Image (cartoon, rainbow, N blue to C red; front, side, top):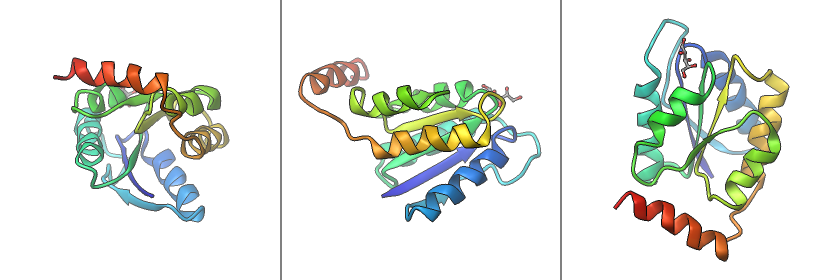
Length: 145
Ligand code: RB5
Protein backbone atom coordinates (compact mmCIF):
# COMPACT_ATOMS: atom_id res chain seq x y z
CA UNK A 1 0.00 0.00 0.00
CA UNK A 2 1.20 3.50 -0.90
CA UNK A 3 0.61 6.19 1.72
CA UNK A 4 0.86 9.95 1.20
CA UNK A 5 1.91 12.14 4.14
CA UNK A 6 1.30 15.81 4.74
CA UNK A 7 1.62 18.24 7.63
CA UNK A 8 2.08 21.86 8.50
CA UNK A 9 4.89 23.14 10.74
CA UNK A 10 3.06 22.04 13.90
CA UNK A 11 2.74 18.49 12.61
CA UNK A 12 6.14 18.24 10.95
CA UNK A 13 7.93 16.22 13.66
CA UNK A 14 5.05 13.81 14.32
CA UNK A 15 4.58 13.31 10.58
CA UNK A 16 8.21 12.17 10.30
CA UNK A 17 7.80 9.83 13.27
CA UNK A 18 4.63 8.27 11.83
CA UNK A 19 6.20 7.94 8.39
CA UNK A 20 9.21 6.08 9.84
CA UNK A 21 6.82 3.91 11.88
CA UNK A 22 4.84 2.84 8.81
CA UNK A 23 7.97 2.41 6.66
CA UNK A 24 9.26 -0.02 9.26
CA UNK A 25 6.07 -2.01 8.77
CA UNK A 26 6.71 -2.21 5.03
CA UNK A 27 4.38 0.49 3.70
CA UNK A 28 5.56 2.68 0.84
CA UNK A 29 5.43 6.24 2.15
CA UNK A 30 5.51 9.43 0.10
CA UNK A 31 6.11 12.73 1.88
CA UNK A 32 4.37 15.77 0.36
CA UNK A 33 5.70 18.20 2.99
CA UNK A 34 5.93 20.35 4.96
CA UNK A 35 9.69 20.07 4.86
CA UNK A 36 10.55 21.86 8.08
CA UNK A 37 9.31 23.71 11.12
CA UNK A 38 8.98 27.14 9.51
CA UNK A 39 5.42 28.41 9.48
CA UNK A 40 3.30 27.22 6.53
CA UNK A 41 -0.44 26.99 5.86
CA UNK A 42 -2.14 23.67 6.61
CA UNK A 43 -4.77 23.97 3.80
CA UNK A 44 -1.99 23.66 1.18
CA UNK A 45 -0.94 20.26 2.49
CA UNK A 46 -4.43 18.98 3.27
CA UNK A 47 -5.46 19.81 -0.27
CA UNK A 48 -2.32 18.31 -1.84
CA UNK A 49 -2.59 14.98 -0.04
CA UNK A 50 -6.35 14.97 -0.66
CA UNK A 51 -5.72 15.33 -4.38
CA UNK A 52 -3.12 12.56 -4.37
CA UNK A 53 -5.58 10.21 -2.65
CA UNK A 54 -8.52 11.22 -4.85
CA UNK A 55 -6.47 10.69 -8.03
CA UNK A 56 -5.25 7.33 -6.65
CA UNK A 57 -1.59 8.31 -6.89
CA UNK A 58 -1.52 6.98 -3.35
CA UNK A 59 -3.95 4.58 -1.66
CA UNK A 60 -4.41 6.46 1.61
CA UNK A 61 -3.19 9.54 3.43
CA UNK A 62 -1.90 10.60 6.82
CA UNK A 63 -2.17 14.27 7.79
CA UNK A 64 -0.82 16.02 10.86
CA UNK A 65 -1.31 19.60 12.05
CA UNK A 66 -1.62 21.06 15.54
CA UNK A 67 -5.09 19.63 16.14
CA UNK A 68 -5.63 17.59 12.96
CA UNK A 69 -8.76 19.66 12.44
CA UNK A 70 -7.77 22.31 9.91
CA UNK A 71 -5.81 19.97 7.68
CA UNK A 72 -8.65 17.39 7.64
CA UNK A 73 -11.22 20.07 6.81
CA UNK A 74 -9.07 21.15 3.85
CA UNK A 75 -8.61 17.56 2.62
CA UNK A 76 -12.36 16.91 2.88
CA UNK A 77 -13.01 19.67 0.33
CA UNK A 78 -11.44 17.45 -2.34
CA UNK A 79 -14.02 15.27 -4.08
CA UNK A 80 -13.57 11.62 -3.15
CA UNK A 81 -11.81 12.29 0.13
CA UNK A 82 -13.12 10.97 3.42
CA UNK A 83 -10.70 12.30 6.01
CA UNK A 84 -11.24 11.85 9.73
CA UNK A 85 -9.44 13.40 12.63
CA UNK A 86 -8.97 10.88 15.44
CA UNK A 87 -7.54 11.11 18.93
CA UNK A 88 -8.05 7.48 19.90
CA UNK A 89 -7.75 4.12 18.11
CA UNK A 90 -11.40 2.99 18.22
CA UNK A 91 -12.66 5.84 16.01
CA UNK A 92 -9.70 5.36 13.68
CA UNK A 93 -10.63 1.69 13.22
CA UNK A 94 -14.35 2.40 12.79
CA UNK A 95 -13.70 5.22 10.32
CA UNK A 96 -12.40 2.57 7.94
CA UNK A 97 -14.80 -0.28 8.82
CA UNK A 98 -17.97 1.80 8.53
CA UNK A 99 -17.04 5.01 6.71
CA UNK A 100 -14.36 3.78 4.29
CA UNK A 101 -12.16 6.70 5.37
CA UNK A 102 -9.18 7.18 3.09
CA UNK A 103 -7.26 9.77 5.10
CA UNK A 104 -6.50 9.88 8.81
CA UNK A 105 -5.54 13.11 10.53
CA UNK A 106 -4.01 13.48 13.96
CA UNK A 107 -3.20 16.48 16.11
CA UNK A 108 0.42 16.77 17.17
CA UNK A 109 -0.61 19.11 19.99
CA UNK A 110 -3.36 16.71 21.09
CA UNK A 111 -1.91 13.21 21.14
CA UNK A 112 1.52 11.93 22.13
CA UNK A 113 3.78 9.97 19.82
CA UNK A 114 2.87 6.51 21.15
CA UNK A 115 -0.87 7.14 21.04
CA UNK A 116 -0.54 8.54 17.51
CA UNK A 117 1.18 5.30 16.44
CA UNK A 118 -1.65 3.23 17.94
CA UNK A 119 -4.20 5.43 16.14
CA UNK A 120 -2.65 5.02 12.72
CA UNK A 121 -2.01 1.30 13.27
CA UNK A 122 -5.74 0.85 13.99
CA UNK A 123 -6.57 2.80 10.84
CA UNK A 124 -4.29 0.78 8.55
CA UNK A 125 -5.17 -2.61 10.05
CA UNK A 126 -8.91 -2.11 9.48
CA UNK A 127 -10.88 -2.99 6.34
CA UNK A 128 -14.12 -1.54 5.02
CA UNK A 129 -17.05 -3.82 5.83
CA UNK A 130 -19.22 -2.84 2.84
CA UNK A 131 -22.86 -4.03 2.93
CA UNK A 132 -25.18 -1.50 4.55
CA UNK A 133 -22.17 0.76 5.11
CA UNK A 134 -21.57 0.95 1.35
CA UNK A 135 -25.07 2.38 0.91
CA UNK A 136 -24.33 5.08 3.47
CA UNK A 137 -20.93 5.92 2.01
CA UNK A 138 -22.60 6.14 -1.42
CA UNK A 139 -24.99 8.71 0.07
CA UNK A 140 -22.00 10.75 1.26
CA UNK A 141 -20.46 10.53 -2.24
CA UNK A 142 -23.77 11.67 -3.75
CA UNK A 143 -23.51 14.93 -1.80
CA UNK A 144 -20.47 15.73 -3.92
CA UNK A 145 -22.38 15.39 -7.21
C1 RB5 B 1 -1.08 26.21 13.49
O1 RB5 B 1 -0.75 27.07 14.52
C2 RB5 B 1 -2.41 25.53 13.79
O2 RB5 B 1 -3.45 26.45 13.64
C3 RB5 B 1 -2.60 24.33 12.89
O3 RB5 B 1 -1.55 23.44 13.05
C4 RB5 B 1 -3.85 23.50 13.12
O4 RB5 B 1 -4.01 23.14 14.45
C5 RB5 B 1 -5.09 24.00 12.52
O5 RB5 B 1 -6.15 23.35 12.54
